Length: 277
Length: 172
Image (cartoon, rainbow over all chains, first blue to last red; front, side):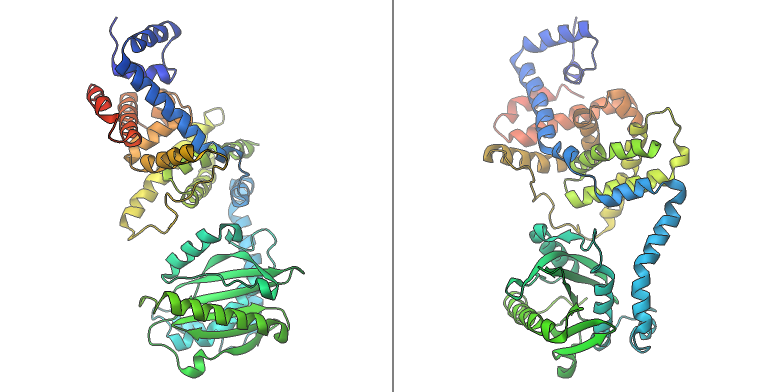
């Protein structure tokens, strides 16, 4: 009886009836080259399992569970509802903002991109809304958590097209929770979240600015309270920063200073300017 | 209750997606998209038929679409491609080997990688793989043979590969 190499695959994949499998096994064993081949293919299978089986033991990510359990019929409604719930806080906050602030953005949304000055003017509101939306999240405060900080740094740096790093705020009592990517006015924005031992959270909102720059007054280190969120914000090297939290101004101030000093240093050391776009 | 059957499949979908894309985040995106698609087409699934094959078929379609879209995109958005390695406890040698496996896999043509993974990692029969991918069984077998041969070459480097290569020409 003659066999072909296809039978080697059939053999190791269990596609042969027992009798034929025995014959093929003998045929394979009789020739060192064939035996090597069969062995190499079996080893591939072993390696694949060794490499990827860990995924079987990992807990299923919550969004996947929610997607499936929300069910086909109720899915759309549920999605809308949860988006609405999340958005509600932001909308209420936005309504509370001055009309010129949040709603003024509409005129930039129609196609032309915002200038750096516009972006700076809108910064505290945007940062405060982002803080208000994400900081109360228990399950999903961040997209990538601090235990994957190296990935977080690479990812956000890629998306913002400029090196981005979460400052270390340990001396101020705040540990990094993680970060996420957010839609800004006309570009991606990074948000880092921190938490102290008392569970108080802060967010650092970081965006690049359109080329053209901002005036010295606009880039200055400034404070603005948006509803119950305090924000320190400033611009440097064509990047805008806002540190937001519902801490008292005098508590937030030293943390903002620490951020200011660290990002100033690292930006100067790492990059001259972000790409123009 | 059928949805729980789908939930039970998620770990396997994640494993397959991980090996298929080589990147954790892309893999989970693929699974998420697959689940959403599966639910949107839930009415089309006939109870009593193989849910696993049905779901993997959807993942195949989503994957093919993503690859097509990615071909138009300027660059990968995942800077982690091929860099990470989560298996703790393995020896350095094994680690290097397993890392090499992931990058070697990604160098196979997509259609060979799909078949190879369905059969060797997921344990699909040739028939099930053919059904899942919508291919004749002969195509499944030739892609499997070519995928394995190429993976062996990539993993073994140039040393042992010479002898293997001569052998492999027999396979069509």
